[in-house]
Image (tube, rainbow, N blue to C red):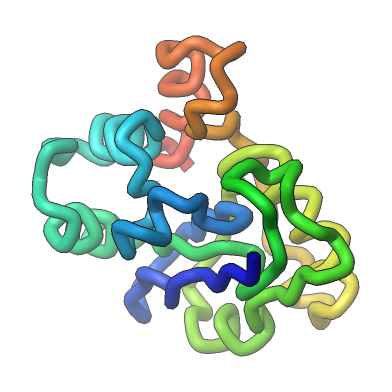
Length: 167
């Protein structure tokens, strides 16, 4: 099935960018980033940035923006048979326009990937197309917050994600 991502959550003051790969079915149905009830993104980022995880979605997005953190996906569109990253048909991947986005958000000084697929897709499809100044923005992979990444305990994920507040 053809799926499309959401617009970014970002303000002009954003200094940090978190990238996922592509929202899963539950997120697409909820029209929310990380809308699956068992995805640990919102509990982790709320803890790291110091706001209540149970706020309404719009308020969580506001808190993220107030913390100068932007949120987006590497992929704009793709074909995927299920919700897993492994279900993505590689030949169908269309990426978001990172040159335009990063030029419009010049304060972004570091990129974080929510899992391996986001990092791999960025390196494969986006990085070769970026001008040198944008390609040199430091990037760090963090463990996926997806419920499919059950081999890493919540506490270990949280500890890794704490670097967002420290960087």
